[in-house]
Image (cartoon, rainbow, N blue to C red):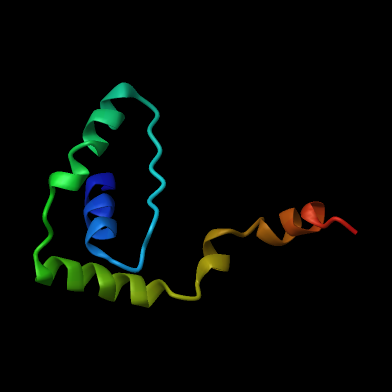
Length: 75
């Protein structure tokens, strides 16, 4: 999955940074293959369609965010 994400980011000119995590040396090695993966236009369009469907749903994936925001205020 991370290789596909990296390939998509690298072909998208409006994204300037990709943060990639790895828990093991094997995952680091796998991430290194991301830049050499070339998505077809059809594959990239499918990923774009999936991402459009998730726009505005970040709160669904971060249920604890409102509680964390209370602690981060510097009043």
